[in-house]
Length: 298
Image 1 (cartoon, rainbow, N blue to C red):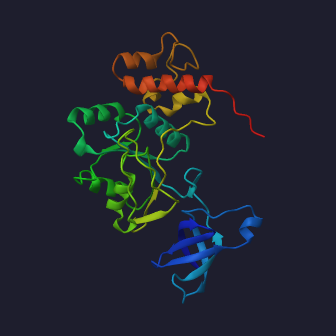
Image 2 (cartoon, rainbow, N blue to C red):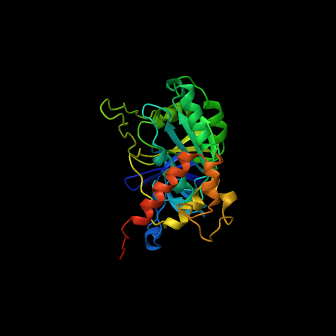
Image 3 (cartoon, rainbow, N blue to C red):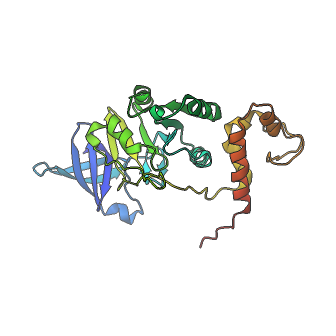
């Protein structure tokens, strides 16, 4: 038996990278289906070597080791953090979508790193505006440029020794960044549409890409929209770390920080202690959740 990590899943086969640096093409035991289990990219597994002559060598996945966590989109296991990549410009970031990503990571209890790309194309004022808006958002904020190499080494240190999901909207430069961090990946990069300034989705499947010893990246398809599912409106305030110091200090218990009098969060916004863009997004998302139609599941 050897231990390894599933780095790719396609057409019923699993590519398992072992600690010895060898990648095996494996099938999963039929027992997993009987147990209602399915190996995921990112799973740590035990494999039995069945053929060392074939190229690549072959084996069977015999056991899935305990998972720390798993995600549905992307369908991957044992993730340590999410890197949310947004362009500063070309395309201009949607603050609303950015907050949606941060909320989803908060809900999944997955540490997030917010990375703004394309500093080489941005004005200083644009960079500082983003820094001021998200400096208190509860996650690390980085600025980078694939073209100039700015911030890349700092990002490498953040990624080192971890499995990180790289996600964000189309056109942010995910594939180009991954090619910088993992030159062997040779990810296809999409050109920006001249008409709508959105990137073409170039990601075809889920794959762990090695960026160093025990360091893996997961590229995900680009998004043009993102919905907050299975979340109640009154839970939203807990996904904004800036509100934390004021929770429980408002005049009314259960204050949702929208129209209630003597609301400490609203007072903090007026005093400049909470950024108005973040609060505006909160109000918009709260209204969306409050007025949405209930989803009935069988």
